[in-house]
Image (cartoon, rainbow, N blue to C red; front, top):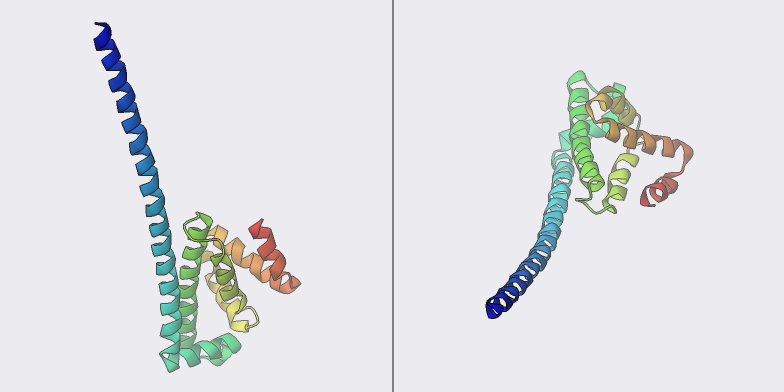
Length: 168
């Protein structure tokens, strides 16, 4: 009987070790899968934004319309205005997606600077403000606040402080 109890205890210890080893293996696999998912997601986000830029660059009519709208929104026809606003809306949907992925730690936080600079680069163009006024409400409140902070930072020339605040 004593021998049976001893054997039972050894079996329990071996079983427990097996469970611990399995959990370590699962943790290692989970970490590898997390890295793979984050890499895939970052690639997808970058591809979507790059495709947006390519679609503008590859079509001279769209490029010219967008440039004219951004520089002087009153200089374009109604259909060109609609086209430019929809193109900017499309870009901002991609940027909003990246914003949320970064916020949920799926994308590296350093990508926020890229997102911010994409928005910031349009701030010296009157058409950006026309677009933002018309389409702002179609984005989530958090993204609206994010863009409004960028707009406010441009006015105050504190873009680097905006980065510092978010990084800490």
